[in-house]
Image (tube, rainbow, N blue to C red):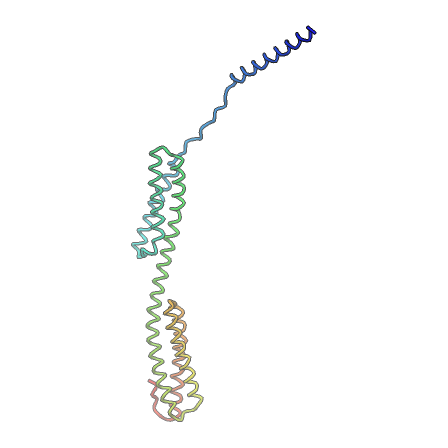
Length: 232
């Protein structure tokens, strides 16, 4: 019995020694330190943003000088203001040593700034198209006046031959062409009102041709009666 007790005491003592040794070893083991993240190099993002803002400002200024309206440049100016605000914020955060936030603002600002070139290009294109439409509208207005005068003359000529003994075929041809010319002239005016001067010019081409056909048919009908032509 005594031997068994001694063995147990010896075993417990050995376990205790091992536990103490383990604790000592654990305390002496080198601890793994968490390495801090590498410092953010804000300058690599700051400089491209600053260059983009300067370049975009020049592009907007040149566009305005070449006649692009303020309304067309409004989206570009808005994005340029956002990019400039981002640049100012980057500088402020950098001075406060808040480098990670500064880097994030620089990235967002650069993304916004890089859209400005496309906005300026679109403003240029819109301005060119607007000027082209204005020129076409001016041409269409002049052509409408010419065609309207032609239709008036043709209408008078058709009235004149309607009271004579002209051939019915010639009279019908003149009236038909006159009707088409009047319809074409009306459609051209509507298209111009709808800001489609190109379409209006197309209808005026047809209306002018129909008007000339009506005049020619009226002259032919008048000639068949032996009376002087009164279409002009």
